[in-house]
Image 1 (tube, rainbow, N blue to C red):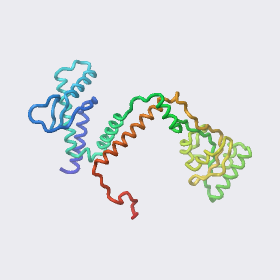
Image 2: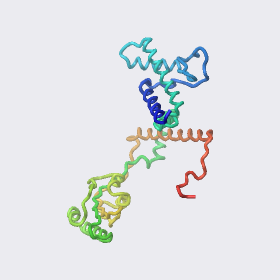
Image 3: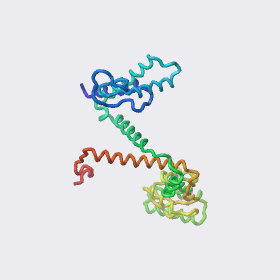
Image 4: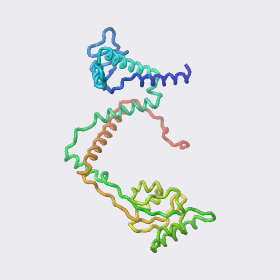
Length: 302
């Protein structure tokens, strides 16, 4: 079989699996076990190779189908559900034979996501008491703040024909002096600054948003200014800026009573993260993981 036909076959298996796969989510549908000979064991609805389709899970799937159907569910519908579960398992087993779970990035991503979701869900703690929420809020107070916002009116100075970088900085310095002297910012901008390709919005902006327009260095300089203050020329990339701080809002601690649901959600998220990290460490401890020395070195380094 050619690589192209094998790839097409893999795609066909995945496509058919998506079509015939039961459209209900049933936990514990199958479980691996020894190869059964003869009768289907008690507690099972069917056996596919070495895999048991549990009777309880089958009945759950039938119940979900009944809840989603306007018509009574009889023996033909029950047979249909069982056939879909069997066909789904056959496709899963065939996909493993083809190495889809190893070679297809989409499948691997789905498997990893499903495992992470399962680990995190199993690790969710009981709903914490109010005292525990208060202690977590106190210990992580810096996490639960409303970030400060800045209202900056920047002037932009790019290099014009025949200008050196020193010339551009000189124009920016002249603009800063005029602003500090109280001249109208719009007039100064029109007479001496350069136009914007994408103007900075007027009004209070989070620092991260301001950074999208000015870049990191001018944004850091802006964060040091008090309301009404004008900066010295600041270079960002190949452009010079003069920054006038019109107004600013400081960070604000958010009261626990207003964000208790957010705090509880963060507690659950961190519990899940801790459980996942512990689970992964146990997997590494029991696995045979070997890494070639030097493989993480940058190319060209000894």
